[in-house]
Length: 272
Image (tube, rainbow, N blue to C red):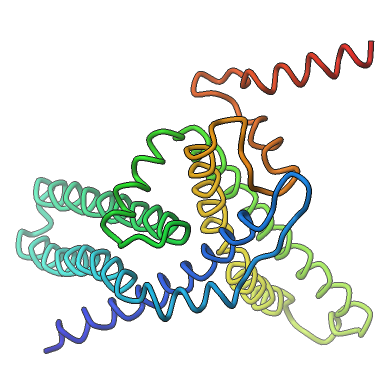
């Protein structure tokens, strides 16, 4: 009974996360397709909520079920693996086998989570079921792998730097306020208030910036579908400066794109 309740809790938590991420992806996709080279559109959050609750709840529940099963297997394995390590007397061979199995299960969880994210992003654009969206989203990632890798890594770096910036700014402001009020003379250590401030700032920043990964995935999926329908370089949708930024991304071998080279050569000729 306890294992059943634990699995149910995992499923509910993953379903809430999937539902929230899907709303963000639908909003980002509507922003892309409401924009073109002449105007910048807006994100339709109301439509995203309607799609989530009235059209795709079953798909989201199925996707969250898959990741919950893998997480449940990993957590149960970790529990019994810990018991086996104790029973073996901390045998090095047993510990090595357990760590390898844990690594494999963690990798499987990461891969499944990424496939789920790609499926939700494709589903937000096409409205297809989960299984077909997972397959088509996987194919899009294989076709435009460099763009997805570059944008996801850039988004992760931006999120990390933003979190650190917010934490440092808030802690610095706290020190200034405490110094102005004379609180530094009354407290024995300023480490406690700074720790609480840093912790609260980090979790708040993580709450608001954590959706950027899903936004990037949704925008890149929208771009890939737009390219597949209209052809590369002939995209009909997207904000005015969006395609220019995508063109600056390098090819798989690290060289600039041909279109970006042509733009640079044209600009250099104009300056000359």
